[in-house]
Image 1 (cartoon, helix red, strand yellow):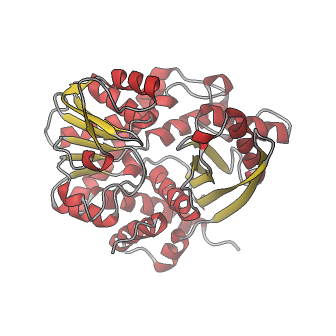
Image 2: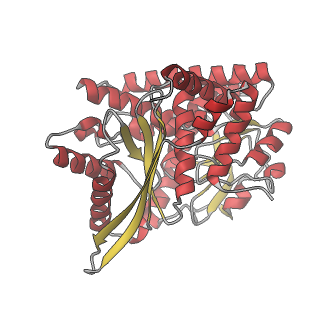
Image 3: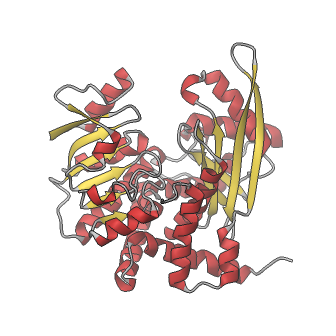
Length: 415
């Protein structure tokens, strides 16, 4: 029976790369474990006057190459093991695209869909005060993730700044532009997905124009990626959200889908479409599949039925190690999450650089730098996969683990 525990999966992926690299066992032992794990209680007064206590986490996996970096998610199913896995994946993601960060992640066990804006704000500010000793522009820089956004980051930045006594723009990224956020950040993750798909099509000598695309998870990343692929001439034939999905073989305009979702709360029920489930969309006959929802969607159970030629991981950890092997043996071109969705953290890095300098770029500059970094990383991963005859996730991990291991080794052990 394959494990679906995210941290066990992260360890298994790391071990594959470490084995291929013949990594020193002492170094491997260090890199397997998170550097810090903080569990906090978050008591807040709800709108009805009652006090509710939430549980939150902040995990820093590694800081050998720079400050820890990683999002904060609000979700009922958040666990410490999930946050540990995500922090490890962030370490490899930052190293894959070669930006000077380590990996971190945070989360609160809650259901933000059933909380008012005031309750979310009070929870965010109390959580910030609890993790305050760990965060800061030089040590750990949070960002948005599942069910958190620019407003959440503004609350964190304000709470942190109010506590230390001066405005600190660089403590978080993904902020509103009015508070030192960068232009282009909102679209960055989806844009990175589009860039990697573009490069995969070139590598396979297949045109992107006319390619059929299915997107599981029509949130920010899924919508932006779908819209940009649509603008490049691809045909969006199916999309899903947490409730269900729709399919139309003739293609759909992502802007129309987004408008329908904004109006009704879901993509379901679009005119001139048929229903499709989150499970069915993964097995759809299409050229490009973008799993942009949650982890463990493509598993040993369904990987043999995936028909897409390209699987572009918009989400973190949507494919299990057993499924990786099946897809690789079947010749599916999988673009791993640590490369595919690294556009977000790359532009977060640009935002942080701008905040520290107090000098801000225009949007073209942001997008051009993103394209340069993502396409360079894609080529490095793809070339290594070809040379080593391994799947692209293992290649990305080999690249990333080698960089982090070298930094760890050069720094040495203290004391």
